[in-house]
Amino acid sequence: MISEAEAHPDFTGVDPSLAQSAVAPGPPPLDAWQRAPYLEWSMQHIADFLPVHPISRGERVTPMPSVPADLALIPVAPPWEQRSASFEDVMAMTHTDGWIVSRDGAIMGESYANTMLPGTTHLLMSVSKSLTTTTAGILIGDGVLDPDAPVTAYVPALVGSGYDGATVRHLLDMRTGVRFSEDYLDADAEVRLLEQAIGWAPRRRDDVPGTLLELLASLGAEHEHGGRFEYKSCETDALAFVIEGATGIHAADVMSRRLWQEMGAEFGAHVGIDSVGAGMFDGGVSAALRDLARFGLLYLRDGAALDGRQVLPFAWVADTFAGGADSRIAFANAPEPTLMPGGMYRNGFWFPYEGSEVMLALGIHGQMIYVNRSAGVVAAKLSSWPTPQDGEKLLWTLRAFDAVARAIA
Image 1 (cartoon, rainbow, N blue to C red):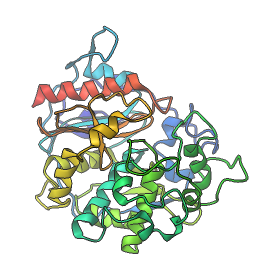
Image 2 (cartoon, one colour):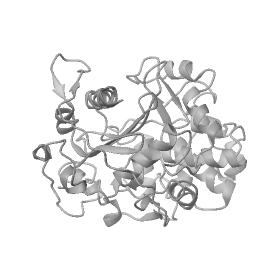
Image 3 (cartoon, rainbow, N blue to C red):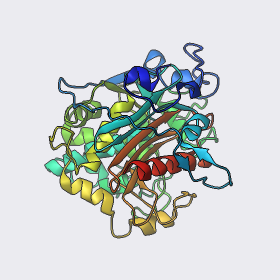
Image 4 (cartoon, rainbow, N blue to C red):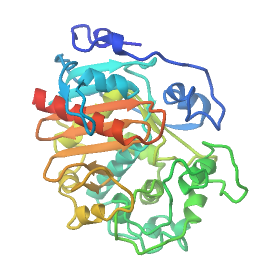
């Protein structure tokens, strides 16, 4: 474990005794790596037992100065039950592997546990989606990718599938009519079949396709495209193939050249791949915590990196925060509870509050990037929740970052 005092010698904020102990049982069985006692270890060691494609950093690194603040005892409002908690309490009780809080690009607090170090790459789960949609946004700004074009114009292999008639915009906002269950506790749900197709889980059914693209091509449609918001991991995998179809380059290399290197990442990242090298961009990216803060800062700074280099199109950032004309209506009609009344989903990001400039990138098992434009705050948290989804832990984390943003704004 490394504390703030070790990562930043002048930091005096969070008590390192709150860190959780780590269990490192070594490479896990393929059918058990997402469960205890392996989960904490495997979240930080994907490349040690599964194939990955690198997302390389460049020579330029944008500096993030350290301006330590005492965040530990900031009070956090409870989401449901009436009990008091501090920021450090919330981080301790939500299986945190690492967290970081920055204001206007300066690190105000940073902590690591469970063998994590500042340079450790940690599986991001569905935070990967936000990196992928942002890469698409850069291409849209360049005119290389048309958000209103059919998905099949870029990925001919999906002709005849449920993606017929869907547009790139539908993928960005999770509004296709493709049939896909995201029930993580159902072994036969498409989200679990996808893991079998890419080799992240043992093959339990002979009819599961052998590659990610074949799995996407096998999906049918259950309703018209462009209607309600419905969270489906397959949408971002299809988007990655769109990126490759538009550029002729592996999506990981596009992400590296146009996003990771341009924003001045400090550490390299990587993405899990299937048997033919296709990237699992719905949840397979692993990256270091500080680089998640650098990524979030792009949206705080209208697309500019900390050294002023324009990385994202201004129009893309503005559109992401504004949403579409019916984004909130589509979100309200979601078939599953979102725990975000009045919120929306746009361009791969969650907006939990109506009339607020708070934006989230979220992943199962407790991954989060938090951007609060009004407060100038970007925070991130990497975790190893025992279960894929936990509404209580999610809301505690969101409330904790909200409290910190109010306190340091």
